[in-house]
Length: 522
Image (tube, rainbow, N blue to C red; front, side):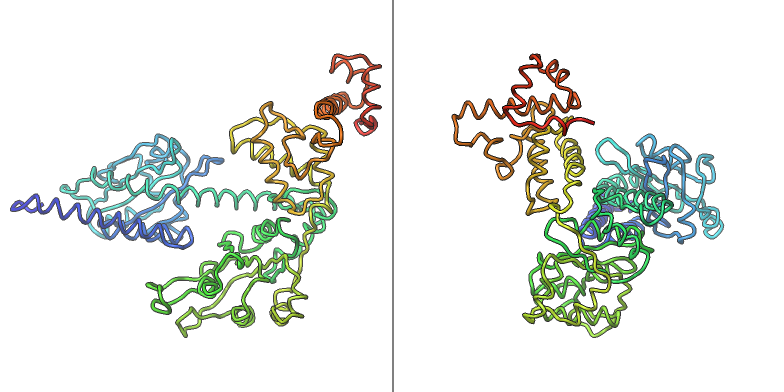
């Protein structure tokens, strides 16, 4: 600190600190992949704080292990060695306790393990000891990782101030780190599960992110298992809401580029004048509003998979450029003549009739043949009704967790309504219906009257041409009897006991409502 004017020096330090936090905020708001969001943060930290290294370590909760996920100043080999058990070493203790740690001299701290094998080399190179600062990265009350930094030891270095600044930065990046951690765990779970399923052979292959055991979906699974290991272009077809994006995710998760980016673009959701810039990027000054260079989705997906949804809505002018990328594996940003390699696997999807669009000259035939290398058709939900109950149970459990409610079952009449409906909106419509029913339920059960009006029949909704009270009583009576028969597996006497009525009376009610007892038997 300048002894002549300590206030000026302190003010300049605060300005540098605010500039660092501003730069980090700007970096986190850029439209980039997760690793490209966090890497500049470490670089800016090193430049502003005179650091030799900076690392972001992520906790694998299932294995209780820590590993360096991103770093500045470490080689890929050194980074790969940065693994710790929870509670092991300084970093492990920081994550386990949720409190920061300061190691003034790493050579004097027995807990400092130097797993990356870089600190001893640095001490010899600079003939000076190193200081190590580590702070937890927290989401609410949970510690999800650690942010750490190395710098040369100095008696005049205020390490407590560095801890304060690192704590602020860790809170700024916590949400981004959590998204990255969840994505890594999801990818690992998918790879592990798919590896296990492959041991059973292709006929029993089933992606873990898709619900359904019907014969129609088994055919889809078989196609996924056959095309995923290749880099072939895939055209996924099917009505809106059938789960085309899930199929694309399954193909990526089981491909050689599973650990690389999976970038999704919905062609129908982008304005026509921005699609080219979104796909291929642009140079500064290429058009009004282009104030900086920007990478497109092809660059962001480098080495991974690019999923182009609603490909049938792609404007003709962009179709020509996409065809060139697929053929020549190169493209240029808008406003640039420099070719860029496109090492990307392309998956496409549409709910439109591309053949009809070709006849109307609204879709290029040559592009169609280029993307239709390996077509996969996903059948609508009305053609695989055996999957409806599986999907309904899954959506009910997920919605219950989302809204902090308990749902124990779906009544038989409600299931009957789900099975008899034609589902024009497919799986997406079913999900919305179940989420609505979970919100309406107050007795931990989804009843038929919790389902939307579009699913109701005249009898179930009480709108049949008869008295309002009589219709309502009839509906409730039908549901109670059907539920009792289901619980008693079709045994009339047991069902009657559950309802507290005689066997003769339940027989009369069964005949009155036309209920088939056989369907409830084993």
